[in-house]
Length: 300
Image 1 (cartoon, rainbow, N blue to C red):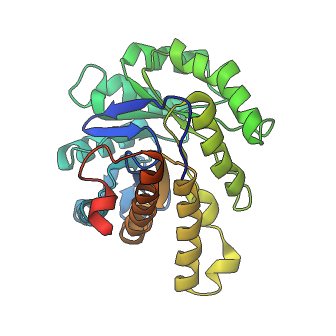
Image 2 (cartoon, rainbow, N blue to C red):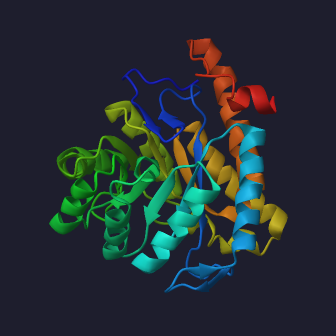
Image 3 (tube, rainbow, N blue to C red):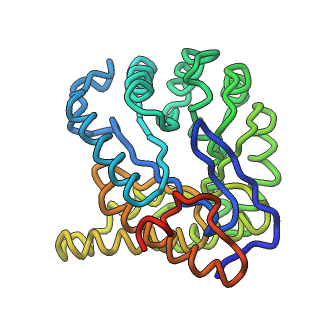
């Protein structure tokens, strides 16, 4: 089974440990909520949403997490600073999970960082993300906020192959994260489309082998557009998506952004099973789960 020669870094975010050798710690699963077009959102500008439906999604995901043993981060996506702050405040009250600071707009992420700087919520926040298009203003705001954890997006149209992504990380992105004061670096290998998800999976393995950082990706946007599988019906479509996610887990993924939180019941079962089998195989190379909450002891 997969075992890296390089020492693997382990980060702690809130109550969740992430990273290490495959089979030691389960893949952290990250479901999205309040994203563009999410039907539970009533006013995306002000961050008004159906709290009952949001709580139902959170409860279903918590149950799936308890079943499989896979920890969760939560990914609220805000269109405005006001909205993102409301979403994070709601999630911080309703859960103990780490929460992503996520928006398509850097100014929105920065506004949220400044709002939560110095609060009890900050140790649970994960900035998403430091990328090729980062600016000095963004890095300064990250540093000034005191946030400790960030996802670094190792993706560029000029660096598609795994070796090129490692060079991008070493030459640009990891130094940028360090300059922003980030202590816990989580590397996202990026996914462009369904076919290139295979390259992203290989990149997970090669980044961990070369650099040792907790590494994963966000295949959801690509696999949710898999039209040739959608027309085969929900069973075939779900099976295909589960296969793509499991492929990432078997390459050593420490985290996966799996898409809408409503997918939680089948995603946690899929990745829990993959993690359990990977951990059992790890016994052959001397790798053991870090604790008794691992999927190995939950699903087998």
